[in-house]
Amino acid sequence: MNKKIVLRDDEMPTQWYNVVPDLPKGLRPPLDPATNLPMGPEKLAAVFPMGLLEQEMSSQRFIDIPLEVMEILKIWRPSPLVRANNLEKALNTKAKIFFKNEGVSPVGSHKPNSAVAQAYYNKREGVKRLTTETGAGQWGCALSFATSKFNLECKVYMVRVSYDQKPYRKSIMQTFGANVVASPSQETATGRGILEKMPDTPGSLGIAISEALEDAASRDDTKYALGSVLNHVILHQTIIGLEAKKQMALAGEYPDVIVGCCGGGSNFAGLAVPYVPDFLEGKKIRFVGAEPASCPTLTAGLLAYDFGDVAQTTPLLCMYTLGHDFIPPGIHAGGLRYHGMAPIVSAMVEEKIITPVKLQQLECFQAGVLFAKTEGIIPAPETCHAIRSVIIEATREPEKPQTILFNLSGHGLIDMASYDKYFAGQLHDYDYPEEAIARSMANLPKVSLS
Image 1 (cartoon, rainbow, N blue to C red):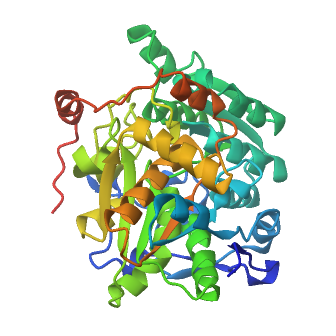
Image 2 (image 1 turned 135 degrees about the horizontal axis):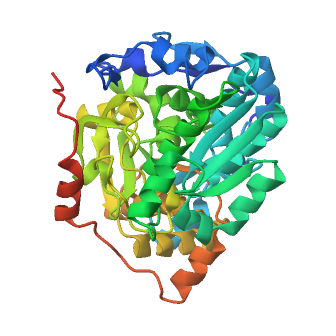
C-alpha cells in the first residue's frame, strides 16, 4: 500500500462534527460563578463573538465550515495519513500503526484548525483585536497566523517558562505581527498581583488566561480566543478525525485503538470524537488519552466544577481538574500543563469511553527519538506522549494484529532546546506530589454535580 494517503482539496470535509448531541449523558452546562446557575450566551458575549457562542452551545450534529475558512485551511489541508511501517519494524509488532500528520500546518501543529475559524467569526462581527494565552507557544503561533490572514491585531500572553524555553515560537508570533509578553506580566492587575506574591513563578496557563481575559474585557474593540478546552474549539478540530475516517477507508483499515496526547483536549478529541458514533453503535475501539505524570489531570484530578483560570473570571466548567490554583512544574511539554480538561473529554472519561494514562517525560522523549529515527519526523514533546502510548499499545501483545491510529499533533523543530536537555541528561521524571494536588483542589468551588 502507499506510505501516505492524501485526499484531494475537494475531498476535504465541508462540515464540522459536534459530538455533544451524541454523548450518552450529554454535558453539564457552564455555570455563572455568581449564582451557580447555568450561564447563557449573553454574559459570555463580552469576550466571545456570538458566532462562536452559538457553536459552543449548539445541539446540531454537523455545522457548515465557512468558505472563507475553507480557503485558508486548504493551504495545508487535507493533512496526510501516514503508515508508520518503519516504526512497526523497529518494534517487531504485528500492529499496523497510522498517524495523522498535523505538523504540516504553517506553524507546525493542529492549532490553526481552530485559530482560523475563531479569527473569521471575530472579524465577521467587527472585532479589531484578539487576546489569548499560550503555553508551549503553538496556540499563540496559530492565532498569530490566523489574525494576520484576517487583518486583526493579536496580543499573546505566553507562560513565562515557555517564553524562556522556546524563544523561536515567540519569533514566529512576531513574524505574523503579534505582540507577545511573558505571563505573568506587568500589563494587567492579575499579573502584577501574582508577581508581587511570587516574583519567580514559572507561570501557568491559568494565569495567562486570566491576563488575556482581563485585557479583552478592558477594551471594546477586543475579544478573547482560547486554544483548547471549549466545545467550539473541539468542534473545529474534528476536521482531523473526519479526514482520517475517509483516509482509513481508502487504506482498507479501521482503527482498533485511537491515541492522542491530552493537555486541554483539543488534538485528542479532534481525532477521536468523529469515531464516537461508531463506538456507540457497537464498534470496539479503545480510546487512549496520554498525559504527563507531572500534570495528571485525568488520572489524579477530580471531576468537578472549576474555574478555567487563576483569577476566577471564567464560567465554572464541569471537568477533570487539579484545581485552578495548580501551578505545574516547567516540563518541556508545555502544551500539556493545563490544570483542567475539556468538558467533552471529561464526559467521555466519566462514561468510560476514554482510557487515560500518565507518562513520564524521559520515556516520552525516548519514544520521540525512536520515531524520528524510524519515520524521519522529530515530534513535539507533547506528541511524544502519544507516541509513547502507541508503543505501549503495539508491544503489549506484539503478536496481536491490530490497527492503531494516533494524532501527530505537531513537529518538534522549534523544540530542539528540549531535545538538547534530554540528550545532556538534564531532564528528569517527575510525579506531581499528591499533597500538592490536594492543596490545590481544596479551593475548588463548592458546587454539586447532581
